[in-house]
Image 1: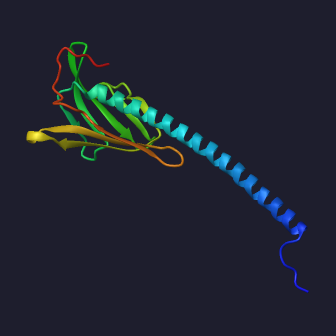
Image 2 (image 1 turned 180 degrees about the vertical axis):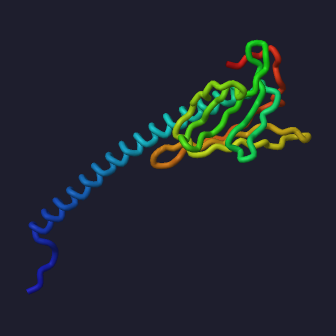
Image 3 (image 1 turned 90 degrees about the horizontal axis):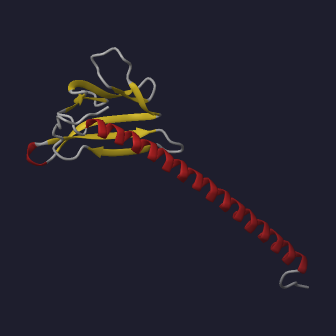
Length: 168
């Protein structure tokens, strides 16, 4: 004698298993959604920190006469007006500690100021623009889990010095 169809027990068991699978998928989906939201929030915080650091660099170099990148591209030297006089300053990447440093006056013995931490890499280069002019470009990468964050910008305009400008 052949049986056709499913027995009631089989149908109930299949329904229970399907319910467990759907519930597990729902819980897993919520967990992944929360995890992704936390990762996205952390990435926004990391990008904001990196953006503030880049803005700090740009503000210190924007009104300077010339920005001269190091040969390896890990630092840049420039002349600023300070307290009515000129001084030579430098922003550079400290590879040993993964930090960006700002040395207000490279001729004095005072230590440089740390303004960004957890930096993976930085590159200062000169970008060619119209009519043979160049401008300083900055590419910087910071540590962030599970992936690093990176920004690239450049000093816009002709970067002419403003003698009456003061930069701290």
